Each structure stands twice: as C-alpha cells, then as structure tokens.
Length: 367
Image 1 (cartoon, one colour):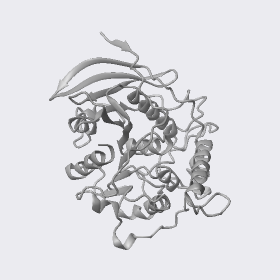
Image 2: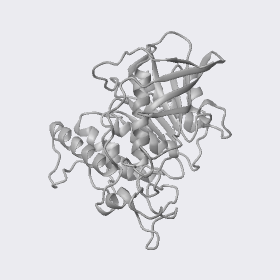
Image 3: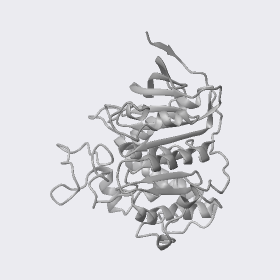
C-alpha cells in the first residue's frame, strides 16, 4: 500500500555551487583542456560575451547583465516557466534493499497538475547529508540498472558511490499544459520538471541542497543540459552525447523536432521527422534561433562558473571544443578555471571508461 507524505523542508534561502579546488584529480585533469589544435579556436559561433546590441562584455558586472539578457531571450523564445513548486508532493512506496542501497518507487509532482509515477529514489547507507543527482531519461528503469541497455545505470552506480539519486522517466504528456494549449517548448518544460525535482531533493533532510547535480544520456542529455543551464541551483551537470550544439549534418542532433524546440501550434500538422530542408522546413522557436544565428553556446555559458562535463560520443566529437571554448572564456572572465570538461569515445553509447570518468567528475564536483 502506497504511503503519501510531504518531505520536510531544508531549503536554504540561497543555494549556490560548492567551492571547488581549481585542480581536478589527476585522472580527470586532462579532460579540462582541448586538444592543442583547438585551443582558442572558437569556430563560427556567436560569442556569449557580446550583448545583443553588439557591445562587448568586459567585466564580471557586465557578465551579470549579459547573463540575464541571455536567460530572458531564451525563456521568451521557448515560453516562460510557471513558478517553481517549492514543496513538490512526493509519494514513496515499494522499498527495496540493493546491496546496501535503499531503493523506493517514487511518484513525484513535477508541475501543477502533473505527477510522474515513472521514478525511483535511491539512498546510500548512512545519515548524510549526501550529495545528490537527478538522472533523467526516457524511462526510469534504465538508470536503476533494470533496463535493457548496458552502461546507462547511472542512478544505481551513483548511489553505490554515496549519492542520493532520483531517476526520472519522461513525462508521457510532453506538452504543457496540453498539446492544444502548449505554451512551453517541450525541452524547456522538461528542464522545468527537473528543477522541481531539485526542489524535492533539497527538501529531504538527508540531502545537502548545495550539492545537487543533474545527469542524462542522449535525449536525457539534452534534458539535463537545459535543466542545468536554466536552473541556477543545480551545482553542476553532466551530459552524455546529447549533441551539445545545433548541427543539421547529423540526424540525431535533432533540436528541430517538435518534441524539443520545433513545436509550432499554428501548424495544421507536425513537420515530418528528419533534418530540415526546403520541403520540410524548420519550425517553432528553432527556426528563429537559427535565423538569428543563436546556438547552445548561450546556454552552456549560463552555467559559469558552475562546472559541467560533456561525455562525448558519436554526436559530440572533440571538435565540439570550438563551442565549449566560449564558456571557458566566460569562466576566465570570472577568474574560474577547470569548469568545462569533455571526454570522448567513438560510439553514442556510454562505456565503462567514459562512465568511470563521469562518476569521478561528480565525486570531484559535489563531494
């Protein structure tokens, strides 16, 4: 029988990223630097260190204003978020011991009128307060190690390493409040849901609200990236091969699709899936973003000086450093080093080596 409860509130008035030593551990340090041939290569991307009126950002005070300009622009394009839920309703059931990790089936309020039941909470042994990670994916079973794909069991692996982990599956109704009345692009709405999951974790007495990160792979990687960028209270983020930039040469970097940034409620019917072309053009905010030469460098920069890791695969090869160098430049302006890292593998799927580096990143950033 399910037991309903409101979890106790331990939210601080202001939650910020933990203080980090500038030097990451030796096994991580090489991944905070681009290949020599890509150092100071900014590609053709628009710099986040330039105001929309064309003037340059020269000081940390300038960056504060520019950062707000970026946030406002993207929220206007994607749809403004409703107010966050300070105390999301949480229902715990089906308690299970898994090699010392306590796992609960979870139902969680992710938006007003929305409860996602495809979720789990995993708690390590001890009293805490623990660091925590929100892990997002198509469904919640994969991250707890009960899916059909290897090396995507992030939540159970993190819990075994001393993190509270919340594994969240995708809301089946990705349009908010409904598809007919959708007012937030689906990818931004998912980020809003993750922000409410942050609040749920921060309310738990065994979680340190200053040490909560967000993680996802592929679709979940896009979701985690937008969540970390748009919700300042996430202390860090890691994104496994989401496609960190708009790239219409690769079909899996598909921000143009209506379930990400291409939803256009005025259309008689949705665009056909696939890379945009003359017969199947760009739609929704994605269309305007591309026309105005905006790209995800803006969102990456919103994390500065919080650290993030790109666990790159087929969609995020080393050349993506041309985009990441822009956030490195923002961090340099803020006197912060070692805040942007990328590992690389050839395949889209994670592997044992890439995951060990990913877990090491969270141990450094949050513990």
